[in-house]
Length: 332
Image 1: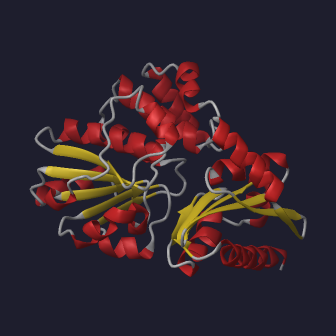
Image 2 (image 1 turned 30 degrees about the vertical axis):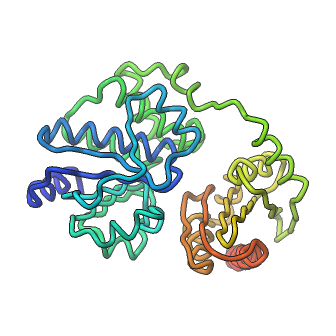
Image 3 (image 1 turned 30 degrees about the horizontal axis):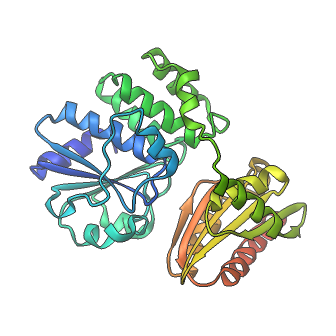
């Protein structure tokens, strides 16, 4: 599958209005890949109107990047009038939250572009699925579309792609050789790497500091084989708290937050844990945990998230059971 299949689908649908959708609380990879893809579509099909939407808004860091990039994101995109819908960095329709039903009910062709494997339900809905788990980010996949069409990204697009890749690779720690070649090409187009990377650093506010400290104080530790697994809960900044617990020494951190019956869980692990056990947090833990909690889960090999319904203890017990089962399998 390539950009040519996408443009052919748009032509066959006589598409005039295309809506690009990102997952809820969209991160820099989601927003930047959507922006870069929108700009490419405008160059390939100048007659098409393109709108970027994100269910329930975007992350705090993504909002910060919007001060430096000309990206417009709608929280209520016009899905009803869409002639084609593209999901970017979104491997399941459930990640669209309040927009999910509108997408399911739409008669417009659905296209998925992601560096996570598509959820089986999403594969059934989609006309085209372009997924590549070897890619560092969705931005890297979109950059390959630019290569394929011989379109040179302008300064803002190159900066957006650079930021999306840098974010999802943790400032290139998780980058492979093909990713680094892509980054080098983006720098050659005029991206100032040092200046652009600095945009991904947000000063930690008081509330986030308190959440991290509370999560560390509340952490319950389990030892499975050689691995230290930490479980904790805070009302906000779960992902940040999970990263803090990993930095303190845990191999796996699971941090939950509950609002009424809604449960959000962030999972993080070290590269060593992933490499030695082969456990992929998104696929092996978050996805089945999300299904168990009547919600959804997914993500990367070392960083994942879950949204569902239930209480914290029930979620933790199931998560611990899944981790034990997977770790035991790696010893056999």
